[in-house]
Image (cartoon, rainbow, N blue to C red; front, side):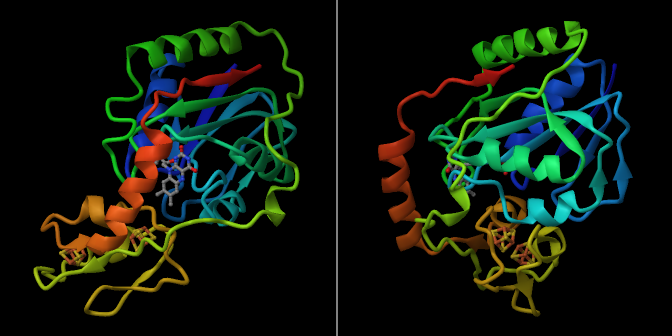
Length: 247
Ligand SMILES: Cc1cc2nc3c(=O)[nH]c(=O)nc-3n(C[C@H](O)[C@H](O)[C@H](O)COP(=O)(O)O)c2cc1C
Ligand code: SF4
Ligand code: SF4
């Protein structure tokens, strides 16, 4: 069996899970989708992993654009939802349906915890040894499988009609900004514009990549919104959540 791994990872948590999967599968090739990537066709003998973060119980909006360049040929796939120790909600089902529109067949799925990119004290140190051992067991089963059958992912089929309760978390540049342009170049949503590195709220997906990449620490979500997010996440993300596997 050949393997391929695609990942969308603004802050690196999803990549850390994709890296583990790649190693476990004998350094399986990885392609990043965080910023636009090249067209890729995957044959039906390649078990393909789509690793993505969970945003508000859904997939990140740019995934719709990124998936346009990937085509399968009834190719077996495994959506891998990486979440910040709250919940995955409908994200696996949404990713599975999107992949199926691109020529893939969902044959397994998994949920892994990584640090919450809005407030990384939640989910800190994940995936840990226990998470990795469970992921290893799941991948061993996939490696040993002689054939694959379609598997339904969990989630509410009416997810598209649900209202989002997302907080408006839009980073802004302070006067310490040196105008290096790194945040603008690597923003997955093309939401940073002009010489003052302003954020366009209608485009920003609040992924926090620009905050984590800024070497002068001059990009931040304004303090009142950061505090509001912290208090909300404290209620929802403090209790440990476990990885889940569907096969
Ligand atoms: C806008 C936004 C919404 C999020 N929503 C959820 C969520 O619904 N459930 C959850 O458990 N984690 C949520 N997270 C946390 C991310 O899923 C988690 O931190 C993930 O590892 C981020 O991936 P990355 O480090 O590759 O960017 C959210 C993060 C962001 C930025
Ligand atoms: S990465 Fe930081 S310093 Fe560089 S342009 Fe963006 S905000 Fe300014
Ligand atoms: S401007 Fe918004 S979308 Fe762009 S990197 Fe920053 S948080 Fe992410």
